Length: 260
Image 1 (cartoon, one colour):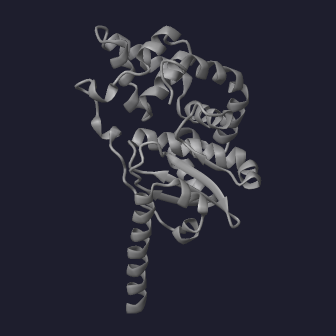
Image 2 (cartoon, helix red, strand yellow):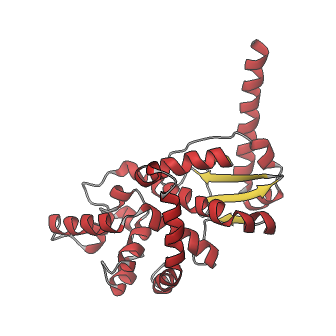
């Protein structure tokens, strides 16, 4: 977890790998104008075309998403019980793993999780890619300046919180990006990164962006359930819930098929 004790180190690491990450960002934007202006929707559509995408609300607070390769196919699972801001970030994070690390994942039989972005460079790179792709530097600078002018008497924490609906991304992502672009000082970033923003939202804040989508998509579920990695790493209650949901889903499909 990124906090006041390691945010400086995280940003220093980001600066070192930023040039190569920006190359990945540019190649993604070059896929088409839709990737520039409707980025999350474009990523979703792209991954659904290229992989088996499974959406399921998991009660595990540390489980954001997963990408794995099994039996000749890539699988991407997104936890849809997390706030939409986090789900958006995870879509871009997992896109990076699939698009730019598919050979490593395929050859090493890796499973990637979004639960501790400080663990290793692979996760750090995916997180930095997501932030750089989803946050335009010029837009961030302009909006932050306008927010500070409009709410001149509010705390720095509250004004950072006001950026969340604009970019539909997590609070800590905004803090890190602001510090990385020198829009706030490193000392301020260390001071506010652990702020309990959920319990200190401005009164004019749109709460809907913090709600989970709870979307469910279980196409190709049988293949995924055969994976030992999923069985070992997913909460037992979630695994059983998915199995039960799958059984109900397939029974309904079978009933419809029998009626035709």
